[in-house]
Image (cartoon, rainbow, N blue to C red; front, side, top):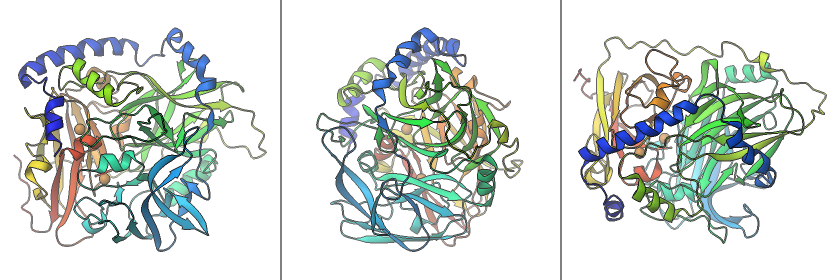
Length: 557
Ligand code: C2O
Ligand code: CU
Ligand code: CU
């Protein structure tokens, strides 16, 4: 469907060999520059103008989960109903914006893209009615569910129809999310608004919360980050068959360019990169200098221990849980949540023509890899009588993850690459070419190592597996920016040490992950393995795999 557009965009491809050489040299040159800068502080001179200009740049107070409206906090205590529909909301100054969204009501109040709050072990029972003029679904990203409840494009909900999602929540506490996932139009539907957060809580999480003394909604905040391409009429625009959709506005909890008043103390922030394609190098800046923070969790919940870091890469669909400490920031000053510049490594074709093409669709958008401010915290006096605890309250040990036993496990190999027609492939497969049949079958209960190699003439792909959280075992042949972040002999950064459902794979890299295919379901369950750059996914960089009891056991290849 989109291959015509795709071909023309990548017309510049002359041959992959030549590109690999040219592209390789190009990124090596740029990486050296960037490594010289990282991880030390950003030069104060460069950052000063930004810091001075922020007052006008962040005019709107951040939306936090409330009782109604956008991002309402909704404990899912019983059967629920949401509608996928379209309505206008005042998001930007001036005209309202049409948003595709999940609508429901709670105690007589309208909730819009609610943050769904769940307890581990509870039953999830939600009926989605499709009031759109096209197929849709709701996918519970990161949750371990069966195929019927996974909301993938295998089970679309037709216009006017509805579907009941009903399962038991077995996942660890963590920030998950939900979004539309129809084959071929996920990028459009998410860009137009069909996505929100899903918070799972368990005993361990509630104990940590008590220990930190941070109130949910004030000192413990979810931040749904997403860039949108917005036109002069405040409409969110999208082009079918687009490539790598990046936007000219960044919304945090549906607030454009927000600020949040913060007291000098610690804050817990749970971030989702809800962008279609944009990859960020996230950090905090105070007076142009990086303010380090503690990384305490990833996609699938808490890390074993907190890691003090300056910044990290967060790809589309990835989540992090962090503690930032403003206690040394004087009242009246500001701290920026920002994306620092990095080498975008879009090596798949001649960077010049590609950038021009992309920017034509995204007037005003910050190019991938360029510095981009997201929101600011304004430090105000603490007038509360109830003192929260300081950074010392963060336990040195957060949880125990299961021991990584990998001896004797078989390895399944994947290769991510671009073909001469400009189509992204996973092991030579592309869903538009090869269809929805399972590319491979996995024996239920088996454990496997997946070794994923990304071609050098490629770009970073946030690869996502449905149905199973996994652990990362190693990264090799990583670009310099990634190598510089390694804290293990196997090349892993702190971010790689948690439970993940989405992992960034950089050009040239080989990443090994380990998955456990134990699950309580029966029969054949089909899941998706795909790139979460939504335009790659929609253009077929997605395969189906099946889990069942009689799949042949994988033997070492
Ligand atoms: Cu976030 Cu296949 O999904
Ligand atoms: Cu998913
Ligand atoms: Cu991709």
